[in-house]
Length: 194
Image (cartoon, rainbow, N blue to C red; front, side):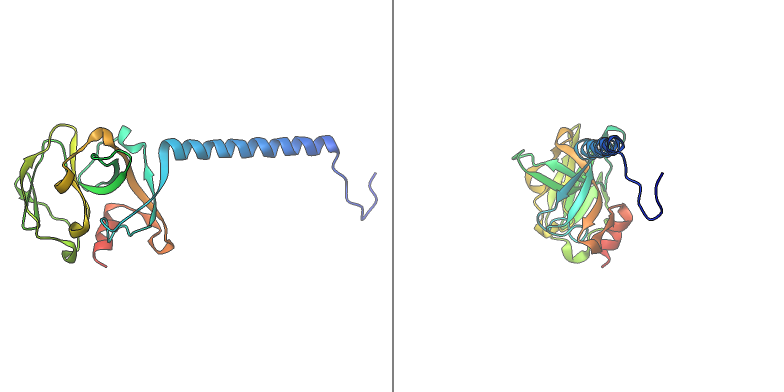
């Protein structure tokens, strides 16, 4: 019997069970977080300005490392891949050309399979006047470019990117806070209009 005003004491065995339960729940939560980070989503820090205005230097984003097991890489996707000339480095660029496409650039105007590609995500001030003779992409290779064309080291310089080098799709920005949100196609168009 407990007297009024005296709190009940928790018996020691019950406290031990409670601690074990909390420890188990914490271990499961940490395990799930590790599985998500290792296999599904990975935080990445953007270095450089080649994807401006969508992504800025030192911005933090999440990439989805699992998505391309279930759906194909599409034109317009912002992907992270191993740099073909040095696989110790990762790059982030936009997919412009798909396997089998013919890519050509005439004074900064981009043509895919003979038709000019409309790129609402590239501000006019970020275009350059470069040219590239027509080239057909081999099977399982992708042509990638940065949105800030005059400051991007991309497929115009190092060639197409083999499929096995692409390991993630940029899906979500989380830092700085004013860029917080999804990296969908509509957000890339909105970024270019700012």
